Image (cartoon, rainbow, N blue to C red; front, top):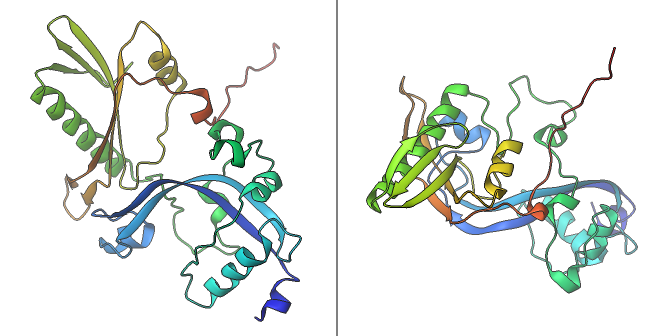
Length: 263
């Protein structure tokens, strides 16, 4: 539609923060890629969901401004190919209720954002197939294969550096010793980008304990061949954080423990 009509409408916006630069993917990750076991979108970048904004105005008084509003319209005529616009994101952060001063800090604390899940992104009439999301693997066998591949890579890394490695699983994944040194390692794996990982409250508490020396070993872009019975894995890009303690601003709770009232 023409812009004079477009700007009278309202839309829903999904607000993300870019967390990883462009890279060429080696692993199928999105649902249609996994279904065909092929990479259809080779150039990717890592994004973190911040908020869902509904009923957003598209005129000059809306949080997008004229340039960004029109860029979205034009993108719709170009098969979704986006247009880069230099704009102040503060009105969008304000509209989402995210307390942040972009001009002062150029960053957003994750724990101050509501986020959203794959359920919010579903079309009004979703196709008749199991729901899948960008960061969640519904196949338990595939999820286990990804975890084991990441753990194998972590074990190989520490053994090359002269550590003796013991696999624990709980309360942490790897226990590494070398002479009088000790390191405890949490390992995470994904077929997608290294933007965020799921942590349990016990993993957070353990990593923050000053008596523990903890590393975080993340393997992203892991290839999984589901055509074989054993689910063959390969590849992966490593992000290795030494002396890791997750900051409060980088944590966003997804669930709560509710204590039931006494009978």
